[in-house]
Image 1 (tube, helix red, strand yellow):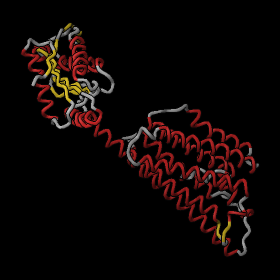
Image 2 (cartoon, helix red, strand yellow):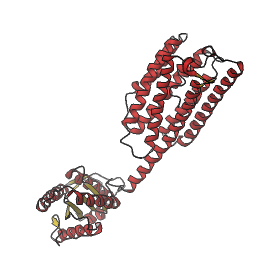
Image 3 (cartoon, one colour):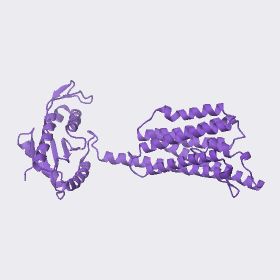
Image 4 (spheres, helix red, strand yellow):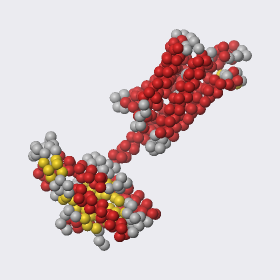
Length: 425
């Protein structure tokens, strides 16, 4: 990605008047090498743009930003390559504005991917500054170099900031590729600044080769490919994570499902064995749920299940696990009840009683359009039975603990429903 190669730097290095060659053969060789590197950059960026556009069109609007950035990269390099054959306004003002806009598109794409947007003025004002200042100072090379350096420094810092901002929130290896590409972009800016400060003659030639244009062009191509590859990896990792989360969620209530409960319970058993903490499993079953479905229809039953899920979550801490096993059965996993068995039992009883009382509050149902059995809002009072089992030994299998919680829950039902029962050996 030519974050800093198309700006005034290219305009500073490429003119022949800034180079002294020992022979016309060397000059022609270097010019040919520069043209080949420009063509390679244009071809690579255009190909990436078309590939990403093909994948993103009609499917992912976020990817369209990256496709546009790759396309702008290709166009800006083309305008720089044909300088002298087109008006200076196009090859200087428009080309450098496109490069600044390309960086803005990368920043915009990363912020949207992270779902942590920043003010649009921070992202897009540099491109406007480049357009206006390069137009005003189109005949003043030194002014363009100074302005371009400041704007590039700001955009580089912004890009690095947005990448780091969402770094810890993403898992996988794609973020490392994006970070490496961004760091290389910063290195390109530092290199460009060194050339502008110390002069091009001292570092632009080495054994008759144009080192600076070659380093910038090759570096730009490498960074572009790294960003494209990192983009593919992070999108793939996000899709895999989304599918994994869907596999662990109940689609109706958005709670976890049995698979999540098994995973979380395994982690909790190991953690509690190390810490000495006692945990608890609360298994909850609604009382007389089937008559509601039979009388009013499944639409009202779904309303009830979603409301129950909400009420349970309101009764527990954020780090407690709440899942729906299926039907009208729910499970709450509590991991931090202390190391004293009596106190742990008391705390679990408090949580279970809180859930019991919250569930018992009447629920006002709204009419369901697909149901014909009830056309007016009505109020329904229901209850639940809760079975509780404490655990503190990781050697106890998960299935045994869940079976004990289920036995305690049925004991609560047999005891008259709308009550809490603890598992007894």
